[in-house]
Image (cartoon, rainbow, N blue to C red; front, side, top):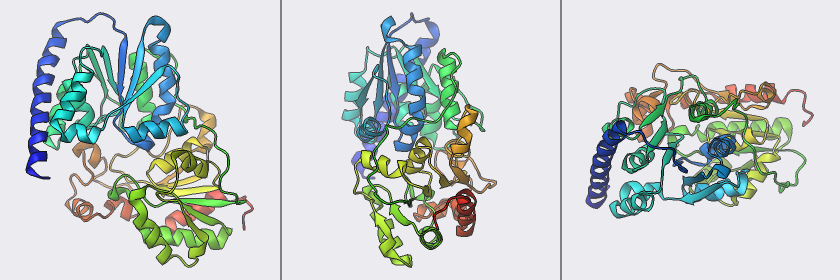
Length: 402
C-alpha cells in the first residue's frame, strides 16, 4: 500500500469515526418517527448473495410498497449483475451499486457515496458485517441503523473493533451455531417478520448447455487463497470420478483463477476428460452448468452455494475459521434437508478465528504464516483426498453411472 492509499484510508476512518460518534449520541437522545426509505447495505460476494435471496421477499412484506416504503439493495456492480442473471428477485426492491473496495481506498469517492445517500435513508440495514459496511453505517445519517453482527465481538484489527461498536443504533447477534440462512431469519424477526422460515434460495431455472448424459463440476477456487484445498487433492478426486463413474469433469471459477486450470491439467491422468470454464462463462451459463450437474465438488465458494440452491448433490470442503456460518447448510424446512450439500470440515482449537479476529489465522501463528504464503488454512489442509472420495462414494451409491 503506497502513501496515498494510506492517507486516504486514514482520512476515511477519521471522517467515519467522527460521524459515527456524533450520530450515535444523537440517536440515543431522540425517538425518530416511522420512516419509509430503507437501504440494505450488502457489501458481500456471490455466495453470500445466493444465501441472501431467500430473505429478500420478506423485506417487501415488512416494508410494504403500498404503505409508502421504498427498499433499495446496495451491492457491488458484479454482484448486482450476478443476482439479476441467476436469482429470483422481488420486483419491489430497487438495486443500486457501489464499489466497496474503492469506498475504502479513495476519500473523494467515499465522500461522494456518503453524500449521495445523505438525508434520504431512514432505515439502514446491514445483513452481514464487514469493515466497508460498518464505515458506511457509521457515516450514514439514517434514523435507524440495524446490523446483523457477529456471534463474537471482533477483537482485531483495531479499526474493525471500533467500527463494530459505533456503526449501529441497533444490533442483532446470532448464536455461534446459526447458519447464515437462520441469521437472516433472526434479523427479519427483529424487524417484524411473522413466521419466516429459512429455506433454500431460489435460482432462475436455466436450460442445459452441457450436452452430456452425466458430468461432474469441480470448483478449485474461492474468494480467498486460504479457502482453497490443495490442487493435487482435486486432481486425485478428478481421477477417481473419471475412472469410477466415467464422467467428464467441468471446472468452474472466475477469471482470476486460471492458474488452477493449468495445474489440474498437468496433474490428472486424463486431461482430455477435463473441460475448463474458468473465466469463460457468463453468470447465467455458470448457473446453468451447475444446475444440471450430477455432482459438484469444491471449496466454500459461489459455485457451492449455487449447487445448494439448485438442489444438486454436492460435497463442500470448508474451513472452520467462521464455523457454521456458511457451511454446513441448515434450513427450517425439514423436506429440504436431504437436498443439502455434504460438508467436510476439521474442527480445531483455533476455530472461529475469522469471526473473532476478522482475518483467518487469528490466534494460530502457524496458520497465519501459511495464509501469508498464499496457502490454505490449516483446517483446510488437514482434510484428505481419501476423505472426500469416501464421501463421494457414499452419496453416489445407488446411481447407475459406471
